[in-house]
Length: 235
Length: 235
DNA sequence: CCCACTTTGTGCACCGGTTCACAAAGGGAC
DNA sequence: GTCCCTTTGTGAACCGGTGCACAAAGTGGG
Image 1 (cartoon, chains in turn orange, cyan, red, yellow):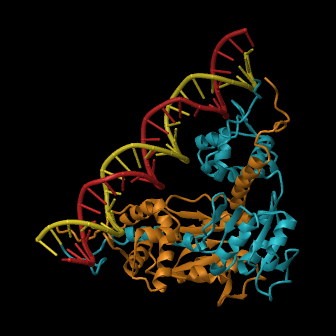
Image 2 (cartoon, rainbow over the protein chains, first blue to last red; image 1 turned 120 degrees about the horizontal axis):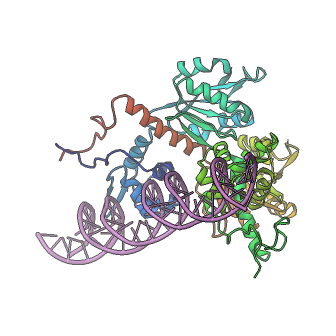
């Protein structure tokens, strides 16, 4: 059997690596715009905010695309990462729930950047249906199945109230969608094979608060002062 | 030395645990509203979408707050987790950048729920300054240092354009803030001791696209068809 | 008081991911 | 062609986190 040069290892890229590829891609796009032709793992890693060993190991999962002594060809690497992430095709995204957040997402140009196209906006509120946002008419949630099928929607962004999220998710999944980005503050239960990613502002703030508290505790005399467990009993 | 009953182990809660505590807290609040007095690790874990062994190990890092054969007291556990996360005090949050996203965040009631209070909205655009949003006047970014000091802001939400984010972050940090939630699609470089959490919609979509591509590849005849590396050379 | 039952808390083996450190590979000078 | 310099790709040790499985601890019934 003849093997191609630079053939990537058998499929199976670590999840942690996948999560960083978009970071590398963004850094590379910046470099491409600035006209750089090649970049070393050291420089790219710095731009992406990771260490260079990690970057090299990540890229090695895609294949052997660097040149020792030189570095990586910027354009070529952009192409390879884009292809690996599936950004060489174009994905139709539907946003469900056109409240403050849904509107902001629809107008947020940044994420339509490469490969993604907002194909539909859906809401249950008759007052909102028919609004014209970011070049699209808001359609009624009753049209969900039709819209998903007709426009080839394969990724759904859920920006509904928490109470509606599970129910909408069920319908979306029944309609054949297997990739959901969930902004509603609930734990969705979904069948095997459906990918959910969750963005939760409140959780992020709580994590920050935890660390902030630690920092201020440390400055004001350390943790575990006297009366922390009013109801605790001495031994 | 007398040790209190139920004293938590020496400080040092795993990061992965911290990230899940808000999930448990949310589930517990739901149970509290429904009037449940106690809950088993099995039930709570299910509600939070994790397995019960993990939940028990997580909680054991806070202390020994359960009763064998019974479960956990809902209210008591809410109190303990809240305290651990620092939600028993109230945190003043400033949102910088009042575009679509900043506005949505300001209006998003959900995350003001417990412990957090939006104390200021700041923007650089004179057209936006003075707008009245969610009960607050938008102030000019020139006031940043004053506002942070006067209102005791300790957590900043960055919702500026990417180009401005690093510069604003530098000023915010210089003003003494050490906790930042960054929505701008850039890698911020910050000194030791400053906590950054990043929310990046575009990255989340790209990760979904990766998995979606895998799924569809698998159905349409498997990966690595003939012409994937047009420029690759046979050995 | 004792026994059967429930549920916590945790020791331990395992696993994915990170980091170090270096051999291998390529470029360029002479 | 040879030597030196740079930079990649990766083996191996390490580290944090997960999940199993069970002993310890508590409840309730008789």
